[in-house]
Amino acid sequence: MYFFIVLVTLNTIEIMKLYVKYDIHYAVNVIIREKLTELGLEFELGGLGEIEILNEISETKLLQLTSYLNHYGIDIVDNLKSTLVQKTKDVIREMIYKEEGLPTSKISSYIAEKVNRSYGYLHNLFAENTYTSIGNYIIMQKIERAKQLIMEGDLTLTEISYKLSYSSVAHLSYQFKKTTGLTPSSFQRIIKRRRGEIETAPGKEIITNLASTNASNNK
Amino acid sequence: MANKPLDIILAEDDEDDRFFFKEAIEKVKIKTDLTMVNDGVELMEYLKNPENGKPHVVFLDLNMPRKGGIECLEEIRANKEYNDVTIVIYSTSASDNDIEETFVKGANIYIRKPNDFKILQKVISEVLSINWQYHTSGLNKEHFVLSI
Image: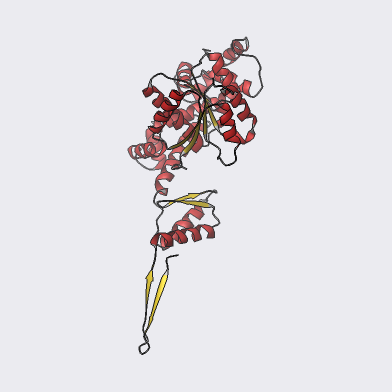
């Protein structure tokens, strides 16, 4: 504790002066702790004004917290940026997981319009905060979606490549291999073997089976 | 989450390989906390010790004395508690069949040990970045396989 209060009372005159000494860091930490606890949030305080919220925080609570802290002149600074990055990720995901397939317009303008920021700005923000680029993130999410569709087994590779806006099966297979190091059919075989759905070791007739249902090229 | 270092363990018996790995990982942009052990027995002891937190990523050399990488992989994957630990096989052996066997046993990533330091650095950086995306975007780890 760093609080010292010095009372100076002067007998004859009814003026009282107080002098306080404080540690600003300590005070801010106490305020933050109290407000977060008040909102029922679990958290960890890092150095340099970093707060890590450990449970889910709703939009309303975040707004409440923002206004609570603003009252003391404390601003939440980093949130806007990470919200924009998260929003960009959400738009990308939504775009890829849409039933009717990817948008026909240019993807960069689509994202910019949905997030309501210029693409150039989002591009830099994304790179600074995610260790990857928007372009690579889109490829990764498309391949994740392709993996999911392959494992569901309802669509052929041709249908999957069409759904995810690849110009051809070859293009999808190429990007799949480039991203995962595996062909779509070896990926499928590995996951099935892992789940115990098939036991055959690679190099057996099961491969031709999978290759024909998926119209894919194995190895 | 973004500022917390990734906890990484490398199990590797070769001193030179450990040295290069450490050098390479220090140059990667993503912050990491690296622990190194000499073989599989040490690794399993480290993991079983409750004082050590659960790592995010385990790099396993396949050929180690006392206990090899495959044995470790099987032991780790037998324990559900370690489901979301990313397991990376880091080895010189590289027949497609060997690689597939490690994936089927639950490895997420297979790295063929590069001879060139620059490439090693690039590969580790890529692996950690992808792992970070899986971690922060809540992607399905069941489908996380990468051969590099």
